[in-house]
Amino acid sequence: RRRPRRVHAMSSSCCVVHLGEPSTEPIAGLVRERLGSRASAGEWETSKAAALILLVECDPDGTACDVARKFLKDVKRSDCFANYSTSIKRRVATLALCKSTCANSAAMLGADKFSGAKKLQATLTDRHGCTALKPVTCAEIEIEEVTESVLPWADSVVAALDALAPVET
Figure (cartoon, helix red, strand yellow):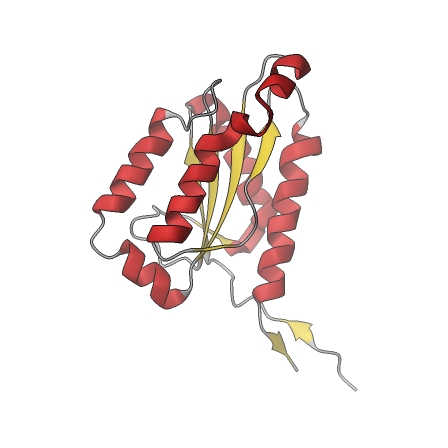
């Protein structure tokens, strides 16, 4: 008797979008690596990806960085993003990249330290046809090791995507 096996119908169907300063691009590379064959190369605007995996750098006050704000403006200007996202049931997962200088400053801002990333994902889900794959998560990239914050998040994204993949019998 054969056991069911997962078929990665989602293979090459994730577009990892880095919305931050060049200094945080290596983190996006690690996430792409962790997603493996699920991650597609290409721009979000032309991507037919069933999932957008966003890495949003937040300013010290918690707002999304300039690159993320530009991304949101571009999404709003897009003629077909919302319709296409709705038709394919596009999912979105967002990791906020926060740069608190110490644990004390991170604690002072609390959940506000990544409010810009939350707002971006909420806009995509409320107005632009996407559905949340996962709640927004924050990685304190200045005070936590990538192995403690980013990689476990990427692994949870992989698990969520695998849960959506059909099972072949």
